[in-house]
Image 1 (cartoon, rainbow, N blue to C red):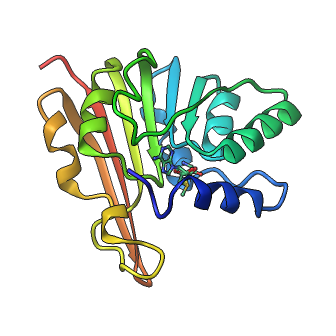
Image 2 (cartoon, rainbow, N blue to C red):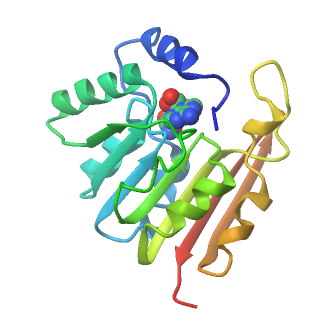
Length: 190
Ligand SMILES: C[S@@+](CC[C@H](N)C(=O)[O-])C[C@H]1O[C@@H](n2cnc3c(N)ncnc32)[C@H](O)[C@@H]1O
C-alpha cells in the first residue's frame, strides 16, 4: 500500500528535508528489550533513523523502501556514522515483493501501514521467538488532508497472524487528536 502518497511524493518529501538524520522513534527505544538478538528487517525504512539506531545497537539491519531518495540519504548517514545497513529498493505494492528477502529475527514497521497480505507473508519470514514491532498512527487518529483512513493501522490488520504470534505488548496514546499505537508480537510455535 502507498502510505500518504506515492513514490514521487516520498522522493520529493525526502529531497526537501535538511541534511540531518531524524530522531529515533521513541517507542522503539523504549521497547528495544523485546527484540531478539540478530537481524532486523526495517519495512518502509525511509532515510534510516530507526535502522541506524538498531545497527548502532548491534543488530544486522536490512532496510527496504520504494523511495530512491530515502535510501540515498540512509546510505549517506550510514557512511558518516561508519555503520552498515543493507538496503533494497522495494515497492511494497508489487506482488511478491517480500518473498525473496529471506528470514529475519525481527521486523519493524514504523509509520507505515502494511497490507494484510504483506503482513501474512512477512510473518512467515520471522524466526521462532522473533519480534514483529509495529508503531504509528492508529485507528482513532483524526483523518485529515494528510492522513487518509487507509493510512491508519487497524487492530484487524493482524487477525491473520494470530495463530503464530502472541501479542506481548500493546500501547496507545491519544494527545491532541494524534493517536499513536505500538504493537509488539512474538513468533510462537503454537
Ligand atoms: C512516514 S515515512 C516512515 C519512514 C520510516 N519508517 C520512519 O519511521 O522514519 C513512510 C515511508 O513509507 C515509504 N513507502 C510508502 N509507500 C511505499 C511502498 N508502496 N513501498 C515501499 N515503501 C513505501 C515511503 O517512501 C516512506 O519512506
